[in-house]
Image (cartoon, chains in turn cyan, orange):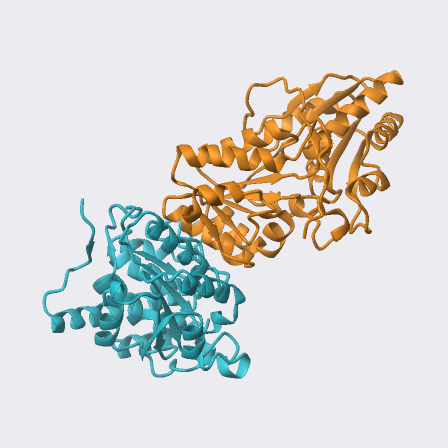
Length: 282
Length: 318
């Protein structure tokens, strides 16, 4: 069998439209799950939706029927609390039926609050505690070098998550080893659970930090599908360093009353709010 | 950070069996890799590094990353042996051991070097008497505490062949090669090293040979002591523990805290299945400064101390 990027795009413009449509669909799906479960992390689901749509429908090479194919590109959802968006994109990419999304966080569901690789296909490692994704991604990238495989490894971290020191242990190793097929994407929405990142334990200048650790850094609008496709799709052999994409995003992006509002980190909607959001997400 | 323990004639440092076995496995299977935290020397992996420099992944002094990298290497189809002083491997990186290895159920082999009080004079920061209690509740994580070079080799070979997470204690304290009655270790099977009817001594790791000596001391006094090798902490041999209770008195012996390790596991089992008088030999908490042998003597982790605990347990029989 062969691995391919899902829905192999035709032309540039169509590709961008397709990713945009997927991102919208992920937001609607994630918010529906959160509304039904009355649990979840919708603010971060929305800030990450465009990144996830771009990866799964424009960049990653995978086969949902052979989820552990040795040559697949790896994606690790280090911000494991944003399962509304993550499960939605996995289902849309064909790893499991979309009908299963209705069981989100229900008793005995495989759709746990945080992802479990032993429950569902398409999940590389169990995340939830923050700062775990990047070290695992570094190990995957080292294995790729050892075995001369050409797969790529992507990891999506939150920005508040970068306060965890384990990320910087891993970043140091990635830079030292020049893991050019590794890409870290930072969902830079500037909000963490309780407050703004910069009011809590500031991260800026974040680009300088990654550069100092040996990364090539790109700062883009994390809701700009063309820019995301461009940067994430670029040939990793064109550089001799790992890549860090700082995706400037808006927490709660797409719903007026949620945008940049810290209370939507793990806020859940009333029926009225849900209806309003669905009107806006079109 | 070496608290060198001299290896007397006839005694062995299990790290030698570890590194020799790992090199043999690496030669036969190129998926075998080692992951260390600047612990090449203390893990005795200098030979491995020389032969396969690219397969020796040294992440530097960064244990959280070390364990995560191990999980990543397993994801990429390698068989990683993550080797590091047990205190840091299980203490510093406990959440990575829990989430990335045990809960994710990844094919990572954790090798806790110089566990227990192997670092003697360096003190409780470098001791790893808590590791068994920390790891025992972690589902999926096979946990083995080998007693001598043969059992260490067997454990390493088992780990390489087994698909899933394993933790192995690799001791530096010099131990004799014991006479085993089995040809190969079997997962979750305790090994009766000596038959006995008055009391059962359940021991593992570097305490096993002391337990055997204690049985001889007890025999001189007319007491018949069974000695059981409890190398497997997970899976635990429940039936061997229940059988041991048939003697009417049980003693556990471990180079670990008496809270939560082998003693805890045996106490839980006896309380549920067959309560009998029980004594625990181990460390009560953080220990003072001293050589390894001084600390063993001081806390009664000696043949005489174990024999005394056995007599005490027997005296409490109804």
